[in-house]
Picture 1 (cartoon, rainbow, N blue to C red):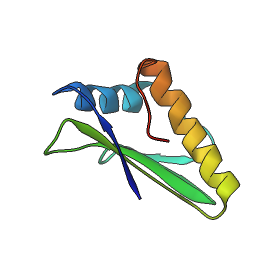
Picture 2: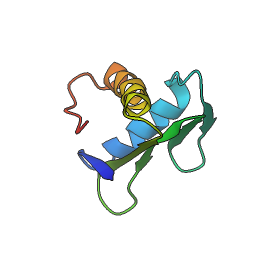
Picture 3: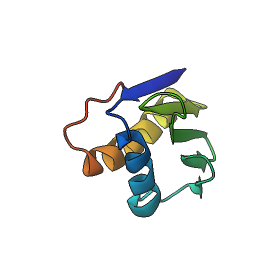
Picture 4: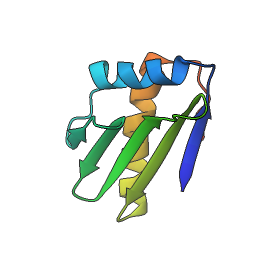
Length: 90
């Protein structure tokens, strides 16, 4: 499923740019073509800025519940390191 973080206009692009520049996604293969996608052997995470609304869109998929939790925890830590007051939907 797709998760969304509603933000003020322009902030969503800034957050993704900061994740690209400063995110620490060790253990995975990072692709920054359309946001920040990190592929692991057992799943992936993606954070990207919407082109139509001031929203960061997140997707997570994994082979197991524990892998999903690990990937979400990694994204949560990186996002909150940049925006500690954000309320995340995961």
